[in-house]
Amino acid sequence: MIQVTGPYEVVPGQAPKRHVRVYVPRRAQRTDRPILFLFDGQNVFDDAPSFAGGWHAHIAVERLARKVPAPVVIGLDHGNEQRISELSPFDFGAVRGELDRQLAWIADWLLPKLRADHALTSTPNRVIVGGSSMGGLASLYAALSRPDIFGGALSMSPSLWVGRGAMFRWAEKRGIPTGSRIYIDGGAREPRMIEAAGKMADLLGRRGIKQLCFRSDPKGDHSERSWRRRLLPAMRFHFGTSRSPAR
View 1: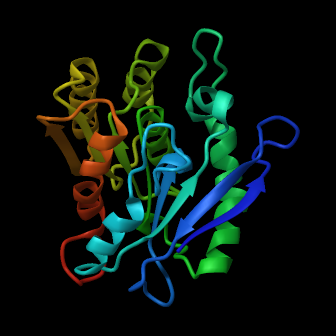
View 2: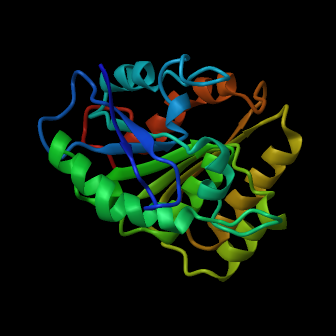
């Protein structure tokens, strides 16, 4: 069952309150459960809350759980009209990047609460953050800027156009946590997105990240349908393909 909690105030007095959606796989470990944290929670599970269809992450994680210790999936809802701002690490145009503030709230309040409620791991390298489009950008930045929270990113069709490529400039200059595990992809039917994703994968490889997967989806476009199809393979990259502990 998908548990919906909240709504919670992310930035007191500013950002709108939002819900958090949690799915614990039926075969989940009793303690120290790995975590897959996904932005745009309205799109993560069922079709109903999303205007464009859901990813059915609960179905994907149950398939994964047949072979590996599967993660608890946490979907953090976006703030509707505030979505672009809260998922952007950078200011651009009229948008003020608020992602750092949201990550601080996740680290300082949300994850400690969820760990207590759901017997979740406290080991950062067993916590993966993911998303698509703006959520894909946010997950890359989150994993690379906060290795104290996240061990890797599941980044689908990331919006690397933000700030005229600000993420590229940031990743070139920033000290990169080379132990991070990074999955990044794009679809052939979104040519600018997949070209940028490939360039980011190359950049991160040059910066020393060894556990890196770039996937090109020949039928993929910029849609929930494509991301739903790619979610399970991305989970397998992060959480393994056998019943041994996830690496």
